[in-house]
Picture 1: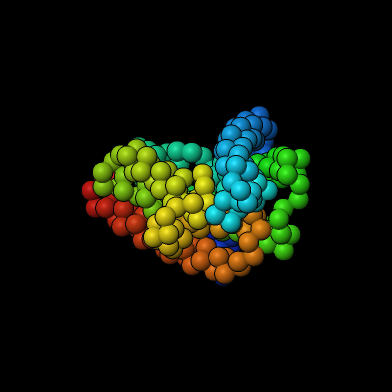
Picture 2: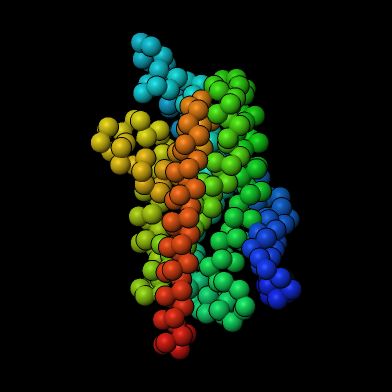
Length: 273
């Protein structure tokens, strides 16, 4: 963490510590190739199981499509939705909550940099190599199974959409985990949060599979920005306005994370850590 402090004190104008935190965490992830391989393996298993189910569902219909997706679109959708999910540690909410309850966050407060800012930047930096590994595996497998993406123009938006998805998810998980400043236990919050992301975020299925009223609600929630948007683009739907949805939610949940951590830190200071 000394690199973060040094970067902050040397910075003139915009602080360098977010970039330093992200790069440092990314290098640590790359230094563990066995961990990257394990992530890619579990990603391939999850994608293979879920993708095969949706391909089968589409192929059993008279038209070969289901809610506007054919077998190829479903394959690319699931491949990318799982990239957005597998890039992050599964129990991040609980882990951050444990750091808060265990006092690690109190120690971080002694450093001249934003506690939540450093943590979000580091989590995103660590996620990028995992995202790259899963994306490489997913693209290769999808090309072998169904061929190229349905629409290359939509696919071109994918890198930005995945980055926005990861940042939004990381920031939202920190906002949820901040409850540990008051309740000292984020395990139940993690359990509920993951279910919302898996279902309302469109990880396991496109939102169009849901009833119309639930789809209309889910697409406007922040969870859709965490997986559905990049997956929808990858499945061949040219809807760049979805990137604006992602960017908006990224700003909102990041602001919420900063606010909740600031209040939590003040509470720690008031009660003596």
